[in-house]
Image 1 (cartoon, rainbow, N blue to C red):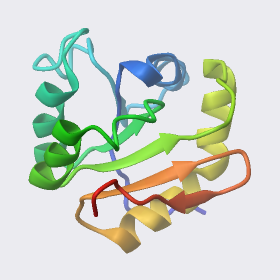
Image 2: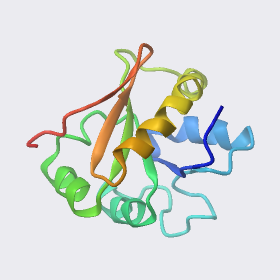
Image 3: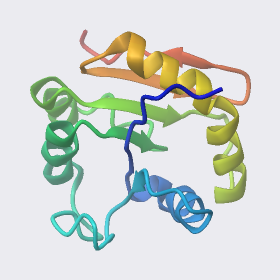
Image 4: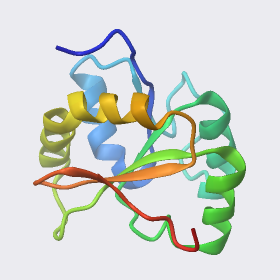
Length: 139
């Protein structure tokens, strides 16, 4: 059973297909670049421009970009804006349908982890086997 806490997820453009599938399934708690509900993040917005918006809003970032956690500028943005993120970290690329199934399979545990970890910055990796914390480079 899901808790009363209901996070809002922001899928970056690397996870756009996942976000669109979840939106079509009726999920109002999933936003992505180009959504009318988020006009300040149009399609094509660079990471360093949407990260302050996602951090200030308290969104949980969902991404497939494995390098976002290691680039110096993005790491600084993680720290500065308290980014909380979930990286879909599987060894091979998954189609959006499989990403959505993976997300839904781990969602209850993900909500517990979000509550437990609180304010950011932090990052989790979601795989076919588990959901685990990941070390942000340089920390």
